[in-house]
Length: 84
Image (cartoon, rainbow, N blue to C red; front, side, top):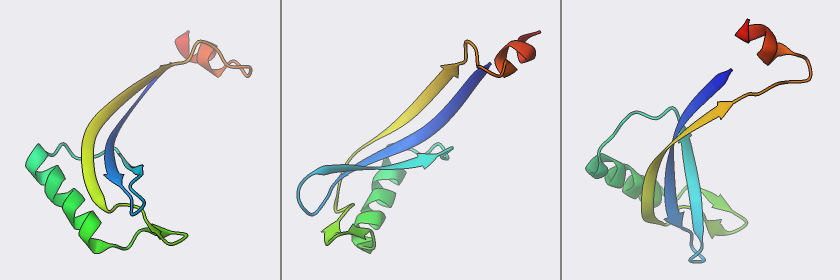
């Protein structure tokens, strides 16, 4: 059985200068301009904080990630049953 997932990984620098990611599952397909604008909005909102560190302070990059998982077998046999 094949399972495919699509995500949009947004990479920011936090208030300590370290990289941090925000991942969006099943995103709309946006162009570079739209993604940069939305990342700017996230950074300007300044609402994501953990232990005094602002998580998404400066946009760095964005990537669409497509992942395919091919199940070979499972202990309960579901993958084998679905192939028949």
